[in-house]
Amino acid sequence: MKNLALGFFFLSIFFVSEVGLKINKNSVSLAIDKNTTGKELNQYKAALLKYKINLQVSEIQRDKNNKIGYIKIEVNCNDGFKGSVSEDLMKTGNRIGFYRIYNTKGSPFGMNPL
Image 1 (cartoon, rainbow, N blue to C red):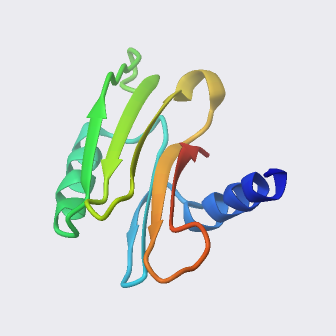
Image 2 (tube, helix red, strand yellow):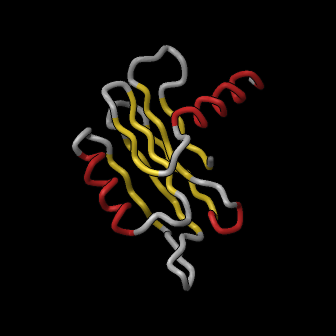
């Protein structure tokens, strides 16, 4: 179990290494940090819908400088893979996101603070 968790951790870093949305024929990944704007979130939602992936952002709280504090995201890939995760990005300095890999026998989906 420990090796599985460690593998998941390294996969999530590899596939979600930069902030933003990355889409290619084999994978989709999204990483959101405290600087992600509302406009960017809407662009990510629209782009993911083209691939039949639903992204819901809720419980978002921003500070006076419009930086994301707390955020919750829910993802449904509409192929059996879905999940949700939340994080206070200001307190932890983490990013939050997900990945979906279509051509692997390993871990094809993951979500976590990054």
